[in-house]
Image 1: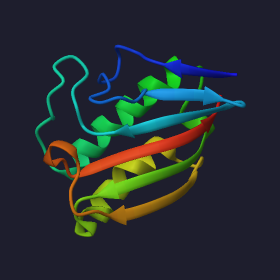
Image 2 (image 1 turned 60 degrees about the vertical axis):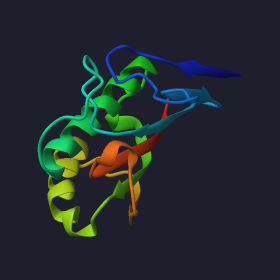
Image 3 (image 1 turned 180 degrees about the vertical axis):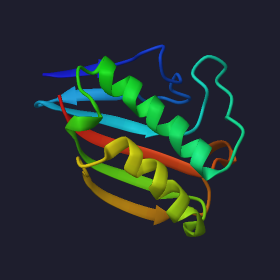
Image 4 (image 1 turned 120 degrees about the horizontal axis):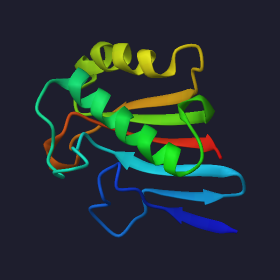
Length: 125
């Protein structure tokens, strides 16, 4: 059985996709960018500030899915500039601590709305 997840505590999907889908005991979360959930606008700030907003958005969708950051098993980080890796990684480490999920990090040519970072994840639900 598959179930879609939607929460007002994270930005609404800006296309034909779900914030998350639960299937076979896992939550598959769509990529989050640093949008303020209340305004739908990109937050101001550097990659550290944007990473924090992205992780707060993921956290909200995970909670709506009945999961949490502690249950994340895999993330993919998309960076506009790999030169931002260390700043992104500092914030990322604060959120995941000892529970370090598997991760891929890639530099991409462009991200939606010109943001510096996007992150998606898979978690047990």
